[in-house]
Length: 233
Image (cartoon, rainbow, N blue to C red; front, side, top):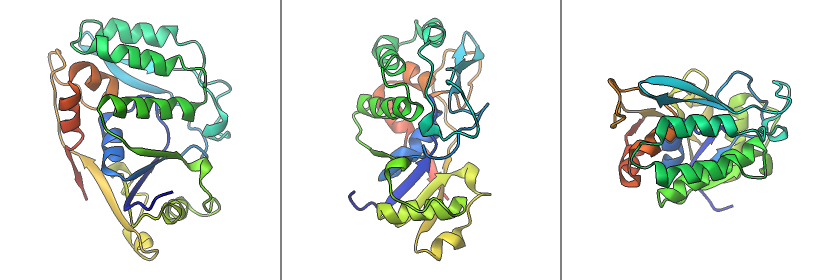
């Protein structure tokens, strides 16, 4: 692997919100944390879209979902009819539907049903649509120390990637301590998304929806600008 200044590590999520993509955009190397245990009732297999002025949850079932199984061992269901129908119904009249829906359909119907594989395809397809290239790896493919604490695992990943800086979403500020990272020659930063808005065609703006909502309502150029609307703390 090439040396990288900045690394970010996140579990794979199904069409996550804009802040997740900002984290990838801000990093030189992004790692899909697929060798940690699956979280039931979390956002790995679900997200929220906007349908006629009200939010609606998208859920893609996971075969034999268990909090005792690593993400890499689990797969999404082949039954994507319902979720595709929800997306079509919610966004068929949106400006960028004809450009974006085929991308979503291809991702959701791909043959490799592994959670990490589908999410990898989703991320690479969306960044390709934005004409941006990002290096994305699976943690399960990296030889790092898996025996330590949460922060020690991240530090080990950073060392293996040659990263001098690790960025995490602002929601992890209570989980990681800067001093622990500095002792291992790694700078810790947190990414906080600014308050953003874009045209949704609703009575009021609904924040932090799935990236699907942003893709359907914004041009690639607009979305590219939204990716920069963050602060590193």
